[in-house]
Length: 250
Image 1: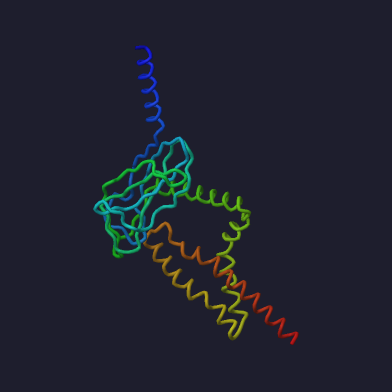
Image 2: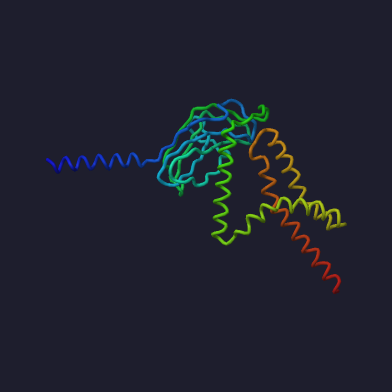
């Protein structure tokens, strides 16, 4: 009898330990609480987690229980323990949802917990601009810092720790080259130096539209294009230099 009681007690302890070890996810707030949102503007969710392992948190929109493809937050690896994180969804085309699902995942994207929040929202071009709650800005900054830190750590591990500062400086370098080269060059070289404006011009217009609409990702396309266009202009300088050197030797 004592053996049986000991076995039952041990089983209860193990079960209790398993329950305590489970990862927990709660939805604490949303901003806005639904309604109409401009295209590209996020519907933000404040989520609380508790886990004994590092976790990722990401959101997605649902309509009739089915996922609605769109933009969602970056999901850096949050440390084990407990904390509050930001998740968000957004759409660039007219879209309607009736719920938001927030997922908690381990480092390898295995699901640990999910929570659904019934919330009716629609994205449209004519929706009025919205202001965000203070907690959105605070959690967004924490998330951006963590994303940058983990990206820098990954680059350093790969021997590419020089790449981060170079990318950070690329918008300024692109702007400098884009102004100086067309002013100094003539003819076909000047035309080639002006070609990046065919991409950066629409990106600038889109960014201004997103900024007016209140999107927190408004400069994303300009930031992504700047390193590529700066590299193009730098290679163009090298090509022109080599061409002139060869012409002098001929």
